[in-house]
Image (cartoon, rainbow, N blue to C red; front, top):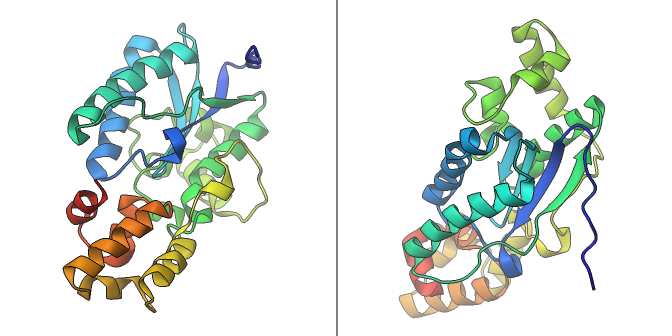
Length: 254
C-alpha cells in the first residue's frame, strides 16, 4: 500500500516527532543527548533549517522546526545517518536506531505555534520525570530563559512582547500553565513514566523502594535489572530510580 503523502505547511513550520525503533531507548547517557544536540547544530547552516523548540526524551524526540531549501525528509536522513553512525560505534551495534518515517503535523498560525512550544516543553513534566519544566536539561526551555544555542528564540518571544524582559516572563508564565493540549505525540500506552517504572521495579524485586535493589547480592541485582529491561524500562530510568550505575546497568543489559 502506498504511503499517504505528508500534508504541506504553508508556513514551512512543522512539529516533528522521531522515536526509537521498536520503542527502544535512543539516549542512554548524557553524552548521547549532547551528541544529538551537537549534530542538530552542526547541520543548521548547511541545510538551512530553523529550530524553534526541542525536547529529547529517552525514547523519542520532539522538534519544532522550519524547513529550509532541503525537505525535512532529507534533513532527518542526514542528521540521523550522522548520529546513528556515531551511536553504533559507541555501543558496538548495527542497524537502524529510529523507527521508520518521522511523524509530523503542520503549524499554520501563531496560536498553535505557541501551544506546540508549551506542549514540547511540558513533555518531561507530564511524563513524571521532573516536577518543574526548568529542571529538565534536554529541552529548549533553558534557551528561552537563558542563552540561545540551537534555537531561534526571537520568533516566539517577539510574539509575546517587544520588550525582551517582559517577553521572557510571559513565556515562563505561558509554559507553566496547566492545560489539556493535545498535539502530535508518542504512543502514551508504550511510554512508562517514573511512577509506573517504580511500581514495575518494586513488583519485580519484591521491594518497597527501587533504591533497595542496590543492596541486593550481585546475582539477584543483575536478575532484577534484566527483568526490568524486558519490561520496557530504559537503562537510564533503571539507573536513576535504583541508584545502580549506568555502566553496570548497561553491562547487565547486553
